[in-house]
Image 1 (cartoon, one colour):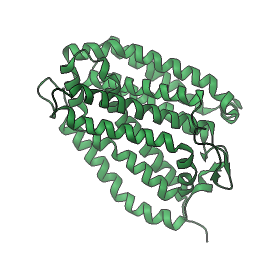
Image 2 (spheres, helix red, strand yellow):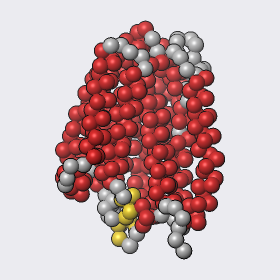
Image 3 (cartoon, rainbow, N blue to C red):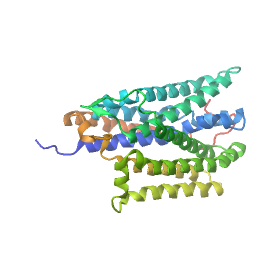
Image 4 (cartoon, rainbow, N blue to C red):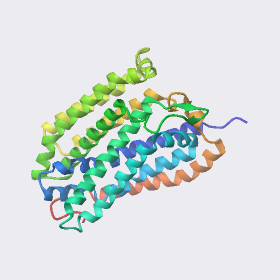
Length: 334
């Protein structure tokens, strides 16, 4: 019996949407944590943390949604990727836990506050680096035989994946600095304006190195981009346009545009990554259709998700609306 519509493709779109929503939403509060040690003073750290405190836990809803959807719709991915990336995923979750605990304990401590500053900054940096390393390992591909991972426990840790990890740390820090520009004023905002061009430069340098290095890591990516005149080249062009808008809007000292343009930079880079790897969900050989669960299972789960996603979107929009505007010293979430 022929399937009436392609649920595998629909689920791929849902999971891709969940992942980019997580990267954009949780990326800026991880970025705030990465920048924490470099803030001008302790009061600035209070303001920075208060700017993300009302929304950070809701942002991580997208991580749960993407992970649960991946398990339900593409169970083979879990069978392979978890053994391959177990240590990296563990480090990411440990970093998120330290960061989450620091949100509450930092404001209730006095003598030990510096320890929670370290936990917040360290947890954010480790989580961001681990996510970037996972992206690099995904581009490299995995050793698979008969749908079973046969590589070593540290195959994911290579110079290329370390570079992508550092690149994502810089990218999240850029999101954090532009968020700080949008949500603060005065001395803290001036500091964020000053560091943003340097962070943008670091992101572009890493982006250029990865672009040159990737064909040597994965020949198929090179062939996809250079085999013919490709519409896909629009994506890096749009990413570079967003980078220019970040630089321009920072020079003009605009509040919101640097953050919006940084989200655009992430979005178009993400779409370029998807276009480079399509349709492989476990490179170099396993496609979406190879890893998909039964059509009936996908349909059953999709019916439930049709209720969940709109609720999450409405709640997220409502939260950001309620906590809109500038955050000032002594007037924060805590």
